[in-house]
Image 1 (cartoon, rainbow, N blue to C red):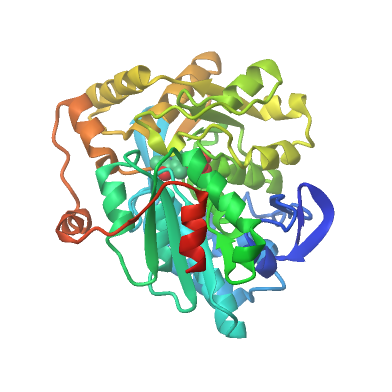
Image 2 (image 1 turned 90 degrees about the vertical axis):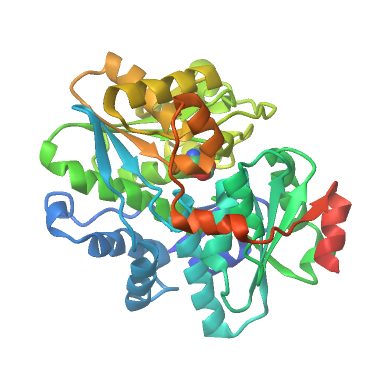
Length: 431
Ligand SMILES: *Cc1c(COP(=O)(O)O)cnc(C)c1O
């Protein structure tokens, strides 16, 4: 498969180079040259495939030429070695729990797939060391750090906004050591993301260090997320009902991967993008005009993104046509107050504890299903509630037990380097 830059279609490369570069030399996001179609009998016989086989069929065309099939199978085995259950919340709503991985958020899948792919490319070439430079609004950092911990030839540098990630998230970023360094940025997530983007274009840095990104702009982080939709569809196929997915969205990588699955032929009925008050995309869907917003901090902090990177990919999928896009996608925004009310409602009705991100997804799903009855709705529960312990316990007036792998983090020493501006970051990377 070849990938081209969305800002210059003649800028083409293979999967391996797209992964190592992260972003195209002209700053465009990479996009596959064609969207592969699923084999003809795939959907009809989906329940007979095991998850690993299904995932290999879905992913192979995207890596073909750079990762052989047996290597892809190994990567997928190591990536998908935990459960992705659809837990019923009511008779027409299920929660797709994506938090059973090592850092308790959905980003584990993309981060592990990318780390394994990059590890494979490095082993092939015994090439120069690569520095993974990544901005996090909370969960990316932990997943990337965990996925890359101890991977030969790779250093990971994580930028996170000071005071704007939860305690558990901060511990996951700052306690690993080895090849992982955490930088605490005096700013918001978009500042972290801007600094990362600037560093990629800084010749003084890139002439000394090979940089790549592990945000969902990286195709190896972004594309494997489509597997959630395959897994959920497979689990629900026997219902024989139209299936809609409601995705709590920040950088819009997860939902965009779902749209790729739909384009490949997975029969997804509709997508619902749910945001907190950082609502550039819901506003676009109402007005047809896209404007970045200034980031506002919320209790669903992994979605505090004012200018979602993957929106350009979503537009590309639908041929940059507003009508086509809005036929497949509905958008809703919710305040923190509404989010807390939803957490209580879910808990009161079913005993289920949703994290703030999942609750935002639930709210949008409920609104959509009110207007479109007869469909089965899945909201993506993107993080374990303990990742947002204070908010969850305070909102529900209940205690949430800490899994032991989180408990042990509290005894570890935290290390991070304070950064106030881009020149601090540059000095660090050049040192
Ligand atoms: C990253 C994240 C999101 C947003 O995902 P995008 O792919 O950036 O849209 C939502 N919820 C949680 C818990 C996350 O960590």
